Amino acid sequence: MKYATLAAIAAACLSLFASASHAACYGSEAYKTCTDNSGNTYNVQRFGNTTNVQGSSADGNTWSQSSQHVGNSTYTNGTAANGNSWNSTSQRIGDTTYTNGSDSRGNFFSQTCNQFGCH
Image (cartoon, rainbow, N blue to C red):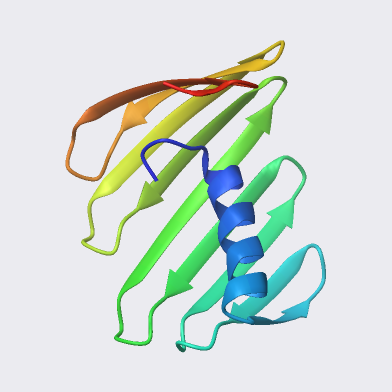
């Protein structure tokens, strides 16, 4: 989670589970619940420029994240399964996305991505 925005993570996770783990998803674009073959459940709620994701694993761990998209920026806050908070801010300028934040261990991170990759 520390190198991507929440919205991108949520989309990637749902996409990954739908294709690799054969997730069963029910609901609408505004509210969707997915369960994968491992028994993990993901609730995704979208309204306006905000996306909220809550997940729970088959072994009882839970996590959540919320992102808001404003202009060319995305602000994400989350709570990891260990109970610690994390955050990230991404800004897209042209073909380049700049992301920085703090992971659930309190470590700062920064990443720049463009059509040639990320560093």
